[in-house]
Length: 195
Ligand SMILES: Nc1nc2c(ncn2[C@@H]2O[C@H](COP(=O)(O)OP(=O)(O)OP(=O)(O)O)[C@@H](O)[C@H]2O)c(=O)[nH]1
Ligand SMILES: [Mg+2]
Image (cartoon, rainbow, N blue to C red; front, side, top):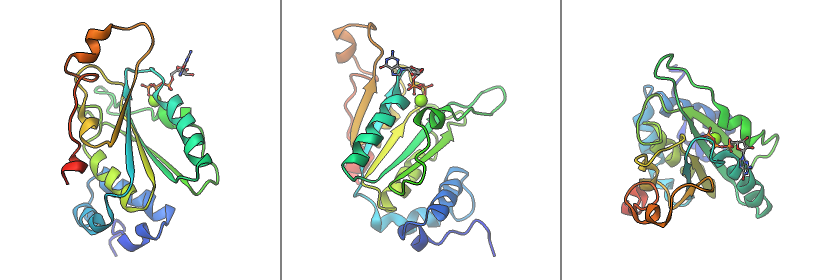
């Protein structure tokens, strides 16, 4: 038996263990990743995807912790995909977002996964879109995506999220910042809206 093979039905039935394995398959583009993604297609398109982006240390993970508490108080199930930067030198990543968000404990309505950007530019990882689709198909009401700490040009999340939040530390820039192109000014239709 191929240990990487994932039963899409088990993902749709809400098995956390299978969901965690499915994320790994997509993240590492293992054999079966394309088939898994395709099998989940009919169940996609229901979750509300929130992208949280902004400069390193701006407070993205802290805001997500607060959003998690608020959404759970409203009985919404939430999956979080946090992208942490990988080192161009060692290739490794400290998955620190997960630490800052705290442990969801036994809460079945929360699923948090940190992955590394693996050198992908744009603020996400190469597999992020597929993992968002996976969480959507698995039935979460809300999918929150934390980008790596971004600069002006890392606007890829705008293509995937229904709602985009840019966390800005106080005291930077002026109103011209908001109308320039780039992370604050760009308005894009998401991939998901385009189908
Ligand atoms: N004073 C103040 N500190 C904050 C606020 N939000 C977050 N912090 C602190 O700022 C530090 C970084 O916060 P994070 O939430 O980890 O920031 P982040 O944007 O997720 O950081 P990266 O993922 O590393 O880019 C932590 O020590 C937080 O406690 C805030 O509103 N005010
Ligand atoms: Mg963070």
